Length: 441
Ligand code: GDP
Ligand code: MG
View: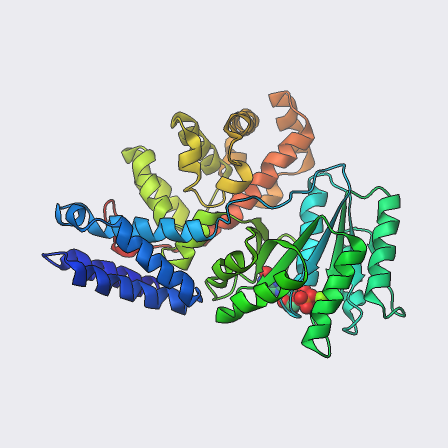
């Protein structure tokens, strides 16, 4: 896909005269590529019309960077489709919220329920899991196993066959136990499709969820719209989670799910493990969809913001896959120097949504400074090591003391480092485009 879009844009920039035909050819190529990425036909067609209205041919002819302008327009349009215009209901820590998960069998509901619970538990919530899937044999065992591993309370039954009854009992029990996030996992299959949707309606009516999350497998292709719509018609879907983004699928179906449910994507699943779960971030998602790679925008930014003399060294280190604490420190330094940091952050993979939530720049800046103070108490060995085992408790204690911080805060900083190192490890072996060379897109 990336290939065909960049080819389309290449053809366009080679043309001496950019006329209607050249633009149309280019847009047709992009359309084909997006369809292959599972973006729904109607969405692509609407986008094409919008772009024609936006892109001013006179401007293009006047020697502007045509590829850039069209690419930016496509990018912006896709971002717009992913923004339903209103945020989803967000549970509040300490208040009781019931969250119901729906989706077809195999979409990743049970796995995602646990990931969602675990994600919140790590942030100090008190989540609980209720298994209202009585259709599939082994459903309760699966949830029980996941929940036990994550030390999350769970409720279910081997005997009871009424999903509504179990859902209600589970929700009641965890309300009494003052859990603040009660997650209801449901079945994704029934003998008949209509009965599945009826069951979802009944479970929802009985448990009165504050939020219904539609879970979608990123590889379902063009079926996404109809599937999402079918669920939306029986229950009040308010958010979407796209799973299996670690696979080959680019996830274009997510655009359909947003369009069909008028709800935002809130998380993506990136693996089978409990912590392979990320807050959804529009820009890297769209980059990937366009085959731009999560790194292209970022590489541009590196060239813009990292001092010239430091670039080759940093890029070399990154392509070797060694993301050390010292590199993190240097990146923090660069980031703090750059003024309106949110803009830069939004380009840095892994940094944006988690470390730097929108509208909380001040707080994030303080956090980064705090992390840096702690890193100032580290030895060279610690800063340059990429061995995660090096940081034992006595080292952490020494660092905490040196920085006048709690050991808990040192651990939090190291967690952040691990998270970033994991993402950045994907840089390993990356071919590094030279400044101004956009053909790598
Ligand atoms: P359910 O039927 O909707 O409850 O789906 P499950 O949670 O049982 O998941 C179905 C399969 O997909 C399991 O083998 C999961 O391990 C796998 N799975 C779920 N989410 C992800 C993901 O984000 N990435 C990968 N690679 N596999 C996933
Ligand atoms: Mg399940």
